[in-house]
Image (cartoon, rainbow, N blue to C red; front, side, top):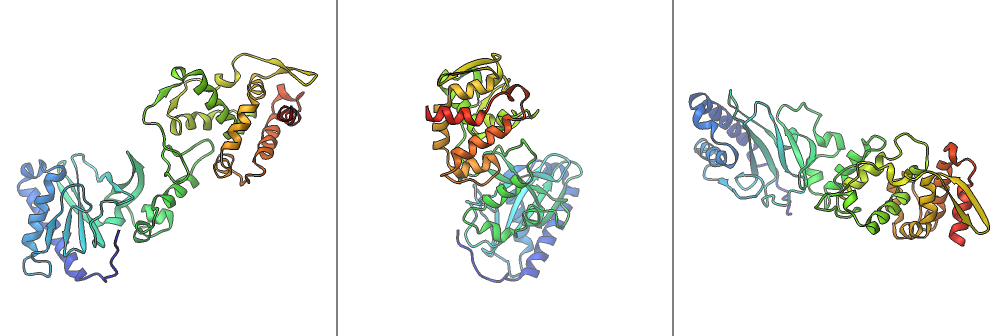
Amino acid sequence: MIISANSEPNRKEFDGLLNSTITELNSHAKKSAKAISILAGNKLEPYVRDVMTNLAIGTAFENSIELIGGQKFPDIVAKKYYGIEVKTTTQNHWKTTGNSVLESTRVEDVERIFMLFAKLASPIEFRCRPYEECLSEVVVTHSPRYLIDMNLEQGKTIFDKIKMPYDTLRKKENPIRPIVDYYKSKLKPGEDLWWMDTENSKASNFVIKIWNNLSVKEKQELKNKAMVCFPELFSNSNDKFGRLAIWLVTREGVVCPNVRDLFTAGGKGEILIGKKIYKNIPRIFLNLFDNIDFVIETLVQTTSIELSEYWGIKISEKKKISDWIEIVSEHSKKIQDAKHLNVKQILTELMTA
């Protein structure tokens, strides 16, 4: 994307042109409401272009109003510098989903963009604001997009929230990262973002699957990964399966109606380690001990960066295995039925057996 360094040419005159355009469009809406009401979507774009073209006669913008069309952003360009993005809604409100945060289809050389919004529900009304002043949040369809709110108060834009101006964000190599960081900072315990940028996360499955339809191998691989990423599974927390349930859906595309049963169904049991028999072991620890080789293999294959994100602490590649054992061990001490077990010692013995 090429960013020009020009100052804003004829800005006051362009602001006057926009004001005149909105006044004229609102006048048309009163006189010909029925005709205007059917101009939803891209049908309104050439109409706005024609109104602006007529009003631009005798100004610095005469013969410079261009309808871009297609999937380009914005819809209309004036003097190859100013842009007008046209949005419509047939509902009686001033909100809609806007354009992609990435702006990969932005018209070259356009520096200053304005949002022209048409509310086509009765009473029909047109409004216009600088683009960045009416972007309240980021929402996700197939990719992150801005949420437009033409009634948005000053100081309430997404750019105010992330403490970064629109023009600074859009020029970044990865404009998604600051937005992801902002929303992650607002997560409550157990919450996660269902969409992530591709910098540090793998692509999610296109198809949502039901747990029971997975193969035995697929189920066990996911359980091994879960025991690595969510050591709180071995605690007595009431919501210890919450993050796992979200992760299965958002990262793995799997819906599991009874996540708890994956680790606790089957009651207590016993295990022989060396010459010693450990009895009355809660099922969740049996699952761990029985699959320790595969769990450790998964742990080795998972980067310390990813583990740091899941565990909420900074760890290194060299210490990630010992850190995991320590975390699991500390969690286990809070489980009444596991107080007779030295989980740290058992895990260490299993790994060296």
